[in-house]
Image 1 (tube, rainbow, N blue to C red):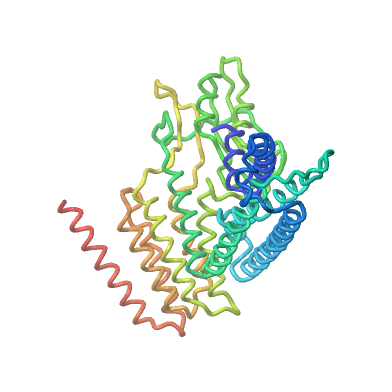
Image 2 (spheres, helix red, strand yellow):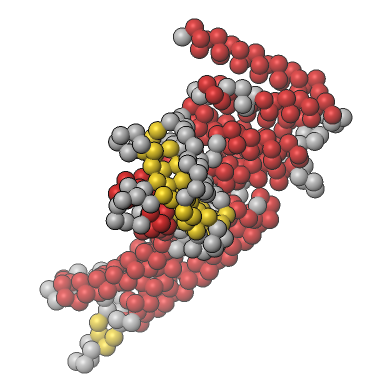
Length: 437
């Protein structure tokens, strides 16, 4: 996927695209219906034939359009105010990084887009109401009735919007939304890359390719790196991974020039996307951290909401379980002859497994429910694991949970130990069944 395609994907996920498209659509609809009314309906005499339907005069149409436009504009302003208020509240209570979930909510985008578009539509139709030179008047009846239909649609959209805003602030909905985003990131991580080879170390030396600006690495096109290396008969060793922060002039990669005509530096620059903030689309670390942040904020000093923390930890089991039974990320890409051409630096699965334990345990003192949830997470990950080299990696963090339970006088150590024993029993049972199969 090229940079232009990745920009298009980010634009589709952005808040502004659907409202802008709605406004452009309202302009086309208004002008199209007015032209249809003027040249087809009234030009063919249908207005006279259906006179009872078209009895709204210039003054009545003007008043109707003005009322609809003014009311809808006020509703749009109210909807914007509600959205901003909810975003501010959510940012304060659950963390500013969750704001993007509200901004990317399609229902909110469609509601605000259609409300604003109705105002634009009525304004454009309103300007076509006029008195002709022969003393007659022109009223685009079809367009006026179109405004009435839009007003009815806006009422239902506003009801749906209020319901969506009310439900989206619930903890369960927030956690489920973030979890769905993490699942999408994990699924993207499972994509296959052509020319994958067994892991190996890159050679020493090489020419540095440096970053052209400051920012976070939000995307890395492995396939483009491989294709460029093959065409240029070069070798590329990446020094950054998705999620890393770089500054202008810092190393992005090392290259070894080949006999091709291209420049491997251009290949690296084209394959790397830099942005001023991290993106959950390809960054597994930040996608996991969004759920972990919900758990940490729920049990941090001044807050006592272990149930939210438990819900967030439980939601990690599904997406991370997909990762544990899926394919490992590619580390080396080569040509058709098996010669290594590109060395990547994917985030190790061990590091992703450790993230929730490393970030939650420092705040889990006195939170027995949270410790039990972490034990459950470790058990689920071990059960889902299909990588022999990762066996026992998740369960090793249970010893950290046990140590904290022993040191913390506020936690029922017996209950935590019972949960650990039960988890170990289930793991042993699952292993026995797997061996038998």
